[in-house]
Length: 243
Ligand SMILES: [Zn+2]
Image 1 (cartoon, protein in one colour):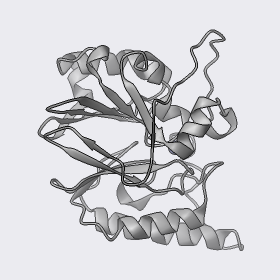
Image 2 (cartoon, protein in one colour; image 1 turned 90 degrees about the horizontal axis):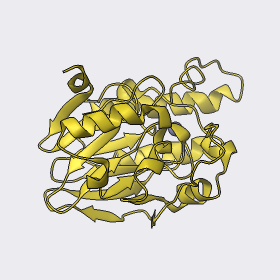
Image 3 (cartoon, rainbow, N blue to C red; image 1 turned 180 degrees about the vertical axis):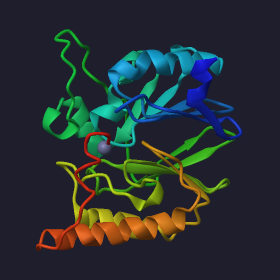
Image 4 (cartoon, helix red, strand yellow; image 1 turned 60 degrees about the vertical axis):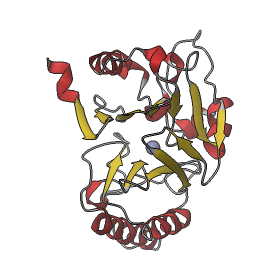
């Protein structure tokens, strides 16, 4: 079944569901107590996401919690299909942009005039925790790519869900309208103090070399700062289309 090509089980009951084209990936965690989805992807990716969930034995209404890693449209666009059943959670600096429909920061582009407004039911803080029984997920506020960016850490398996904060190979996303390079360097420096075996980003491949990739991300961010003083760096803007 072609749809299963989009699904990879990363740890017991933790599934990567790849996003199509510009959409972010989604990660499903089937919990003992609650089912949690990290990022909903773009609106038009929803039919594929729905099929993948069905292949994993879940209907949309079986998702209890949707956590957004940050406020960009390619991570929150399909929230509308979940928000009547699930609790939507995002860092409060992301929630402030999502709930007032700040399209400058979220880059949200849906053209449907009758679209329902997006809700955020739970405004997260640094060190908030989701206890799913089999997994305990810690929220780490990691501003930089945007002000409301979070990573989600599972300390037993030592895995980290990174949204657009970290990509495999240490490649940077661009620094968004609400973001800051200084915040980014500080966030990655703090993440680098954690023991992490693998990280799971919002786009591209997963990382099995997190320490190396975090160091590369720091080097790239420092180069980005120097770029503002005239030193050439290359690859920051080209990822804008996909992140
Ligand atoms: Zn983003």
